[in-house]
Image 1 (cartoon, rainbow, N blue to C red):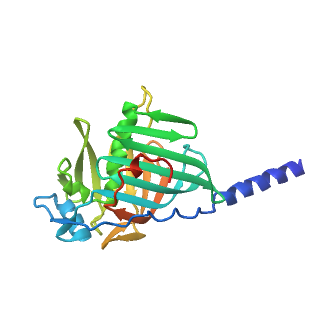
Image 2 (image 1 turned 120 degrees about the vertical axis):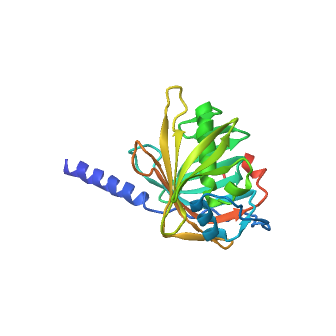
Image 3 (image 1 turned 180 degrees about the horizontal axis):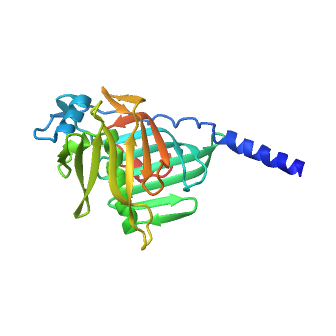
Length: 272
């Protein structure tokens, strides 16, 4: 019995250590940011929205057509399960298509790979335990995920003519985005001290099956660590939480953001 307890203790220690080794970062994206055009800050924005953009960009808003976000993360693929260190690359044709590639690691080595995309309005999730392809509820979830991730390029919310802001109060606004022929609404809450967008809340499907119901999904831009993206100081760390779980299932830390690269072919690839 003593030997068995010792073996179990050693295995637990090994698992604990393996989950604390951070993976090496992915290599930098091979293209750099192309020249950024600008437009004047639009008039008539809700007060907290105007304050947010003035603090971030001033009077000139960059026009962004694509972004590639590379970094490392901590993810919990199964609710209640272990949290894995991970590395990721999120690639967007802004407001149209995206592709995710994520590697969860153990002792720094990949043990779980996720290829996920939303292309031409159709989502595809390739997970080790199965694939979900073009399911209506998964499409809704992917569309909302796409728009939430554009907080790494928030000028898109002003330059995309399909998107609009609606006022709520001095610290809150609605972000209205398209989904097919319909509209979805994020509640965006701004930090009263910094003026930055802090929380985004929306009703989103977590599962693709017929009985699945929408759950409040909350993304948060965490204060503290920032990343300088061509003069704009953006929060570097974000978290995602399902309300019924009550705590984040993932923390993503951006280490490189590239704007306006040609990503059209890369979006349709797989892996890194």
